[in-house]
Amino acid sequence: LPSVDLEDLTPVPAHKERSDVCAVPAAAVVAEAAVALVLADAFLEKFGGDSVEECRRNLEGYLKGLRGYKNW
Image (cartoon, rainbow, N blue to C red):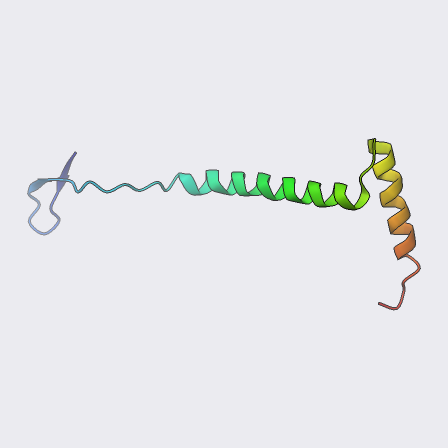
């Protein structure tokens, strides 16, 4: 890979360095997906059931129970 020496502007071969600056946005997407899976697993551990409707009922019951705690 040709390059230029900035001190005297002579052509020189480029250093063999690797820079994956485009990997950071992709890593953010992967990390977001991993966090979503962990949160979904925690949600199902707390409110899980045999169906989505059962999960919904469990969540609604939990939220209804929290409404009784007004002093925290």
